[in-house]
Length: 330
Image 1 (cartoon, rainbow, N blue to C red):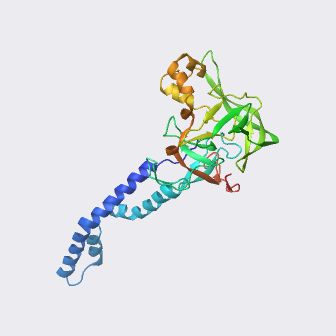
Image 2: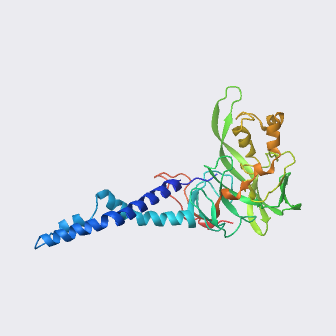
Image 3: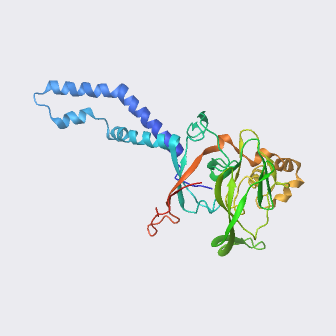
């Protein structure tokens, strides 16, 4: 998941309203103010410049809108068509991206899109295996996620025994190190239903994976079994869709797992029920076997993450942001 100061819709509306105000002012009121200034100057021998200024300007609100419109327009163009900032709030892309990383996302690599509705109007390129992409989460498009592109249209993806296969070929990986971390986890008492948060030690195995020539680091947790929502752990990527996975392979809500959210949304299973309950319902079991439900539609793609420009895990005045680990994302 990624987060950012989400004001795309607000920015679009503010820019549009400001534009309308500026146009209306120029078409209907500017000429009247110029005429008022001309009349005043003709009626007195020594025009007062303060009066001239007051007559030539509109209301305080109008002048404010006129002054901020160029700024809004520049920000709107930059964020909508060129580059957009996001913040990483979770560890699903560790070790590539850390909690608190602030990233930049290229908005035109995969095509120029209309703001808000995210529809491609000028095709430029397509996501490639190995790209780190931001997209609208399929079960809830109001939320943005960031994962690595694993499968492109036509690919056959398998993930068995914590090894990745694409079109029958085992993807190469090399073991690098064991990494010990401290993570906050929620522990639930199944009897009382209460939850508490604790810090626990987690051992990760660090690997380097080579995905279509893109070498990148991944984490695996030896203590966690290899599971997915689909029994055979095999998916065919349809045309116009993409298969995504987090680099933190055993701690990522990605294409392997989010079908559960669809099942809950449609009322097939309860929110706290195990996914195995799905097989008791034919509609739900059909859902589990539909490869499209595991994929990200092309229309959901926001852009390609290309740079970490700041790290600020705890944005408070007592914690200053760090710029010492700025880097390109690969």
